[in-house]
Length: 181
Image (cartoon, rainbow, N blue to C red):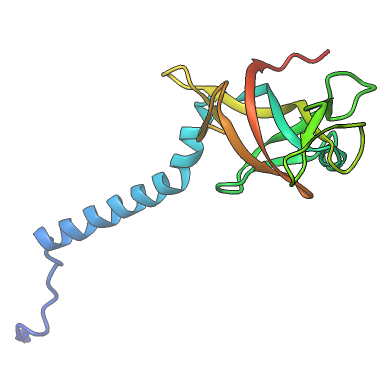
């Protein structure tokens, strides 16, 4: 019988598993887990929030008498600071507009310093307004109210806001849970 001698190069060797291979496998697993959590952590954190609908009542003082004409039920109201949605204007009753207005003053002072009586409405008429917003938010652990879990608001706070047609400063008067009538 003829035995054929094989050289070392012809012999098949089994792959060797070493520490570098283990590190590569661990890094791949960590990367997969990291990608999974990165894409799902936002949903995980926001699902735990108890967001509900709230009614935020507000007041606007000393605005032109025509300004309320540009604020209608259903209009979206945004924070001027970052453009985030604050809420949607709603009425107090079915037959009412978005704002309840009252004259701000019965008198005005002209550029000469003379005081004149206002006969509402005229171009010098100023009004105060009250309104309500339907907002989505929650109370945090410290007891503060947050719109969409991120922007804090409180009663007594003055906030610059805008709608599609007008920009005003509102003062929050109350925040209550929304109860459908």
